[in-house]
Length: 301
Image (tube, rainbow, N blue to C red; front, side, top):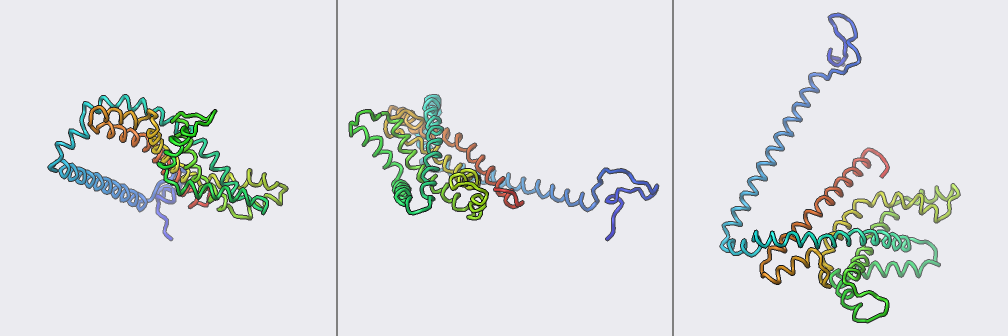
């Protein structure tokens, strides 16, 4: 194998060592220049193709026969300026619902998942109830669940039971999403190899301690990406509480639409939700990519 002067770090003219400074070889420098050139070319091609696609879509839309009427009905600047502050004011309710319901969903989902994974015949009724809960609320459409809870509970006139549409809507969201999150947690628990629990038991830990200190930390860490995806979906679905009369971002837009018969406020509300969702989606992608890299390198996941 031939070692170049650059790779050896030794000056052949003087016969002395030039020091510890690393000098990359000519081949490596050429390879890095080639990679940078490929990256620049790929970026330029992607930018050009994106620009061409955007121009084509714009021309197709604006050349449609009904574009002037559609622009006036859905993209009116006057109604957009009127709706924006009110939509933002209503969005604060959606953010609060996301935080409160998100915490409740994680706690209830974890409890249901643990109930479904309990062992022994004595826990069969608890496992059956947990399975029935997840099957029912995963099969029931969220919009129907919201209507039943938001409209049906006040009709019962139960003493001590709230009729606040925000609380009832949050309850319906929690019931539905807890069923989905419970299955995510259960999948994580069952993905932990039984030898982990057996090793914990051999060290003197009880079943409860093995679940708490050995199984659950691994299960939750493995299921972080799908859990974040469920929270992103929950953030969007908080807008459905408006069916009960709660003044959130969607309802604020709906009030203006009902008065003006112009649908621009719906576009404003939709864009606000998109702007709120994109950071959460990118964070989910980053966490997923990070965990994939650790798994590929043999790290703990």
